[in-house]
Image (tube, rainbow, N blue to C red; front, side, top):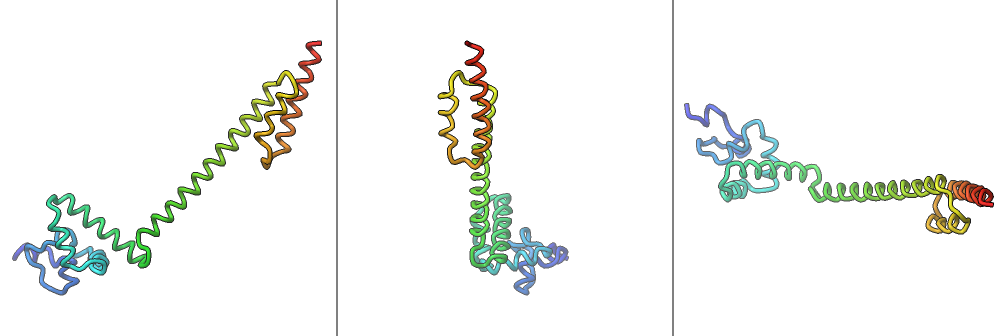
Amino acid sequence: MNDAGARGKCAACKYQRKRCQENCPLAPFFPSNKFEDFKNVSRLYKVSTIIEMLNSVADTEKKEKMVETLILEAKIRSENPVYGSIAIQNKLKLQIEETMKEIDLVKKTTDYFKELRKRAFCPKKNEETSTSGTQSFQGHKSDSTLEKATSITENHANQDVEKDR
């Protein structure tokens, strides 16, 4: 019995309803258990185009990668026939943008509270310097916290002035 008969029909030959030859170019990449994969790929590309693409690549490892890519693209295209992989790319870009905005907000919030902490624990010598820095935080949602920090700083500054007298 020949090798093709021992391994059975490949998915490509099953799909085409023909006998699998020993030198079938698709058999190594589409065994009989990958019928659905081949069905999806053949909907996207003609069988002759798939064979042509396989023949254009010399290295077996690159052929395997190419077939994996074709299978993945066909699977994505079957799930989303209108946009295909572009839909996934756009979704991921949006997620990245949202995450970057969130990171930026966290950095700004962290910087804000670091500045508040610095003002609370490092009293200024006069009131002008303690209130002039508040301009950079104008319009922030937590103005009451800023006011508390400023009043603490002013109290420390007043205590320092009284000690110096």
